[in-house]
Length: 345
Image (cartoon, rainbow, N blue to C red; front, side):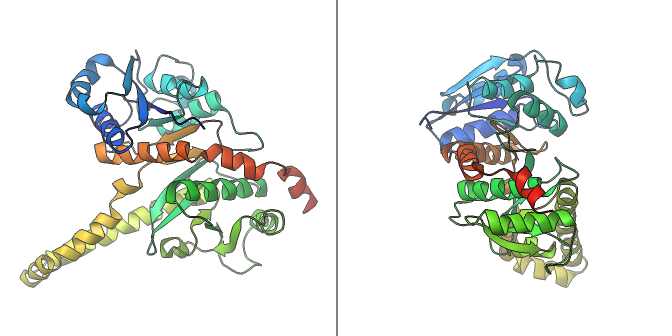
């Protein structure tokens, strides 16, 4: 890998674009001074922010893009318009001008453009949406979170390999443990696809630290470093966890504000809650990566502020520095998952 790292940025995606996007790039540039950036966006709308953060954007190139992908644009529409900031940012990775792309724009559009322009890695059947979530023990990598509603055993095995390499590169875990999300930890439970994937991981990939089956409540416990599932189940699990976290926070706030004693206890407990809030801050876990593509594509949350967007950019930089795609290809090279699946029937 070249020591030069270039990240392309879609400055027009997200609720707070372009100001939060450019602020995030400035923060990342300060943290990773050797990295450089190519920012695609509307020059008139970006000019104030570019001037505001000019001190930290010395290694940035700005390229004007005529069009913008809106939040309600359909993927079938955006893939035909190559003048958008999103398309041009992804295309920079395709042409080798950039090593990774980061956008806070329309998720479906970014996935469609990334799949069309970058294609999948050799021997990878489907890409997966991967993200990092907080746990009692630290952090967990989870995938797939919505890219594939139904998955065969070959997909789940590929997700496991991609997820463990992502955990190594972005979380710094030498030997991340991998679990398959199931309705029970017992071997006889779950769908046939899960059993086949489990058997393949146990017998054909000894270098994978495969734990076995895990249940949904094990995610927050941090039982494994990586949790693998299909996109439908993963998305439901993610939204359930997010909803539960919001519920607990709202109920706690309501309880403390319900009486004078509650208010007093709330004031006394403020340092504790400040620490918990800092750990649970969703901005620290911003940036879902489309793993399995022949190029790195990172989706920031649409409502991200500057700090949150910088976290997504930081993960993109770490993935490039860690040769994430090369590590995935090295681990899966030499295996024919289709033959392994057929042989297991």
